[in-house]
Image 1 (tube, chains in turn brown, blue):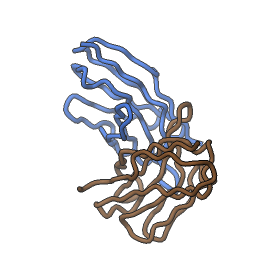
Image 2: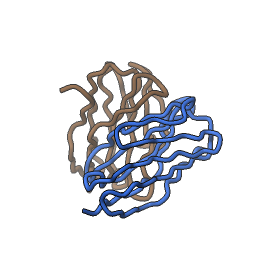
Image 3: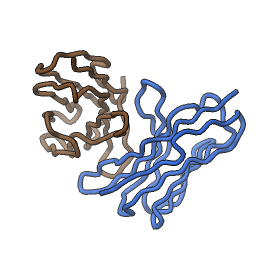
Image 4: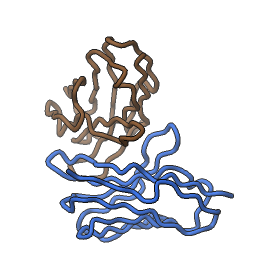
Length: 112
Length: 112
């Protein structure tokens, strides 16, 4: 299917485990972003990527790792999950910087 | 640091009413402003994008305006319908990473 897809949609993991959230887009957009959405905080940027092999930190990067070996994929890894990382995670992409952003359906992650 | 505020936080109207949602931002150095819709448990759907050089955009019953100098945007919804019920998010794109800074949203309920 065309567009931007995230997997899994729902995930429950235990504290201390490593977990990877996947993001795939079919448009060949240059820019990709990871946001988390929390009550009281709204959406906050975790990491972003301007192109394959170019990534940089956003507002709340601690505890997360990203990679982008291919333009279409932008996985987000929680190296050692903590309860404070319980959230809804959204991946987004845009043709280039400053253009319309398109969001995936989100991954609801619960860390127990 | 960019801050985005949306007023009101919640709005309940009868079907058929025209309504206005407000968004304000503190830093006028933006690339664009986007309005999104979010249904419960779902992702963000892009409604309208206004580039910083534009004053307004229209799509169907939706009209968004931008006054960059005063840091304000409005989303006008004409002839509201129950299907318009959702949370509406305003976001501005700025900075070297083109990140979107989001408001906390307006929860709209349109009653039949």
